[in-house]
Image (cartoon, rainbow, N blue to C red; front, side, top):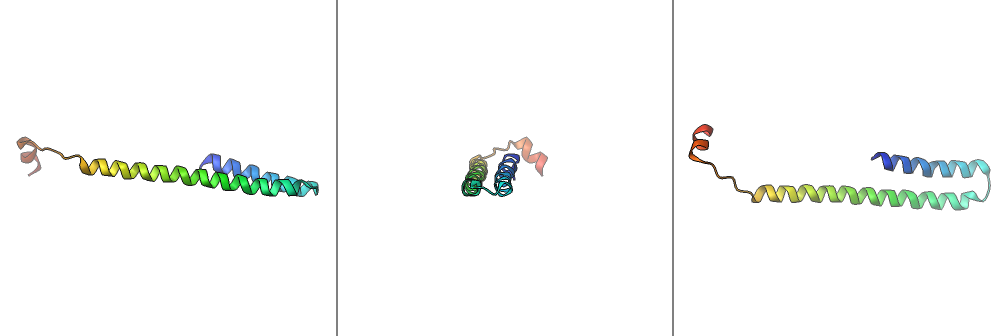
Length: 79
């Protein structure tokens, strides 16, 4: 997990713990808020990973399409 993800999850957990400590109506607000935060962070992380994978896929496609022309000197060196 990225550092931002960990920080946001820690904040969401702190909201839930704090609302439970005060034993008030804050639980009604904090728990759904924490759930929303966790879902948003998860979706952002998923999007980042998907973009990273797509970038690697594009990189591989470009690498396959680039043809390398060897000179006669290169062929002598390789053999």
